[in-house]
Image (tube, rainbow, N blue to C red; front, top):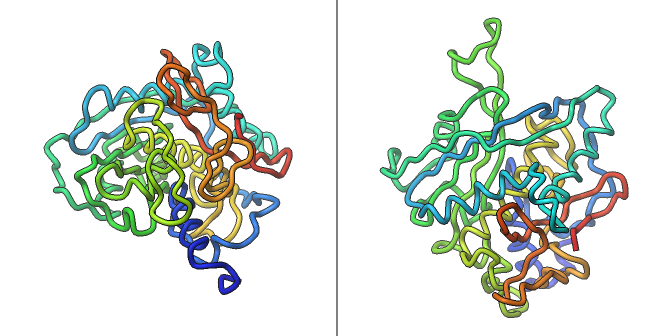
Length: 318
């Protein structure tokens, strides 16, 4: 199938799909297949109840940069962000539809901003393996939590920019976190700041893409190409974590290279999107920045399309 697609289009599709890779690297030939009509449920547990999102900041981040991410997390369930539509919390409600489909009774999922841990001294160096990412993630709470590792622009991470912009998964908790003598698994996410290393791959549409049509990049809504790109990737991975936290929830394809709630809709941010074009987004008349979601405290964000199981299609806010 890949042989029937031009190299330019194939490279562009690869760049777009990098934004939302989760759990494992997707193979090149999987990126040009038709999108799935249904994300299958594999009978595993979903996250439910009140879940703290703990942020582990690895490397140098300005306070203003950290607030872009933390404000996004609080906007997921904040009533403040509902005053202006479309909102971050409205975007997140699409994930709730997956909970209604399961035969098991799940309470609703509520994400809350938890602890923020700073590691500005690069305790594990500036070149990290996946194993070290999990080690950093384990610094957060290991029960009723999602631990998010965010690496600064000068930190290299295994396979970063080569095949992924971030990932999510789960790991066994420490012995101190045992429940009735049994270890349990905690969910984690890693996202890197691509501003220096690969903005054309991981911060599109706020930077020129490496391949394909070279349309002008969009103005980032928070005036930070790297961090606004991180929000897109974090949003995608949060949706994947909520609906497939332990690798046996909702996904399509092989478990080690799944298409999930957001990664099933790569490169789509508004209606009319196609490879190289993010879609018809809203534009701030003052700054010229593009956005599709309002957050709390006057924030604006660009968030990815999510696969809506009720319509079997990719759903965008605008």
